[in-house]
Image (cartoon, one colour):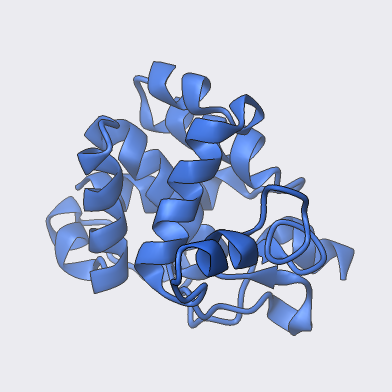
Amino acid sequence: LVSAATAGCAESGASDPSDTNDDSGMFEAALSNSEQIAFNFFVSKGLTKIQSAGVIGNLMQESSVNPAAVEFGGGPGRGIAQWSVGGRWDTSHNDNLTSYASARGLSRGALNTQLNFIWFELTTFSGYGLSQLRAATTITSAVAAFQDKYEICGTCDSSHRITFAQQALA
């Protein structure tokens, strides 16, 4: 269970980036609708394209940006950011997706709700690294800021997150 939780893997049909053609001209077409929506969401919030790509690279690793994703093996991770059941998914005081959605009359399973919850967390709680993310000027630094401060993923597999972020940026 620990290895699945720290790897950030979800049963969502995520593909192995080593299986994709590395032709950057193919990247944009390879983004799912959810990935494109998420990228545009963060750009609309004022993040640069590089910073937004860093976020999306992380979310692609975590869940393939699938709001219905459940952590591999049935672990506690749920949603696009793999928030933990018993934590930020449903019970953390003043900081959980379930309460956030309920207070606004939204579905916690909706992509837009989950994107807005990420933004809420980033802008409400300084420990989630928005200042580090905003300071990022490279894909690598944007991925690291989000994985280290927001995802807090332990064994993060940064190389895949960076590859996904490059795909999102392209």
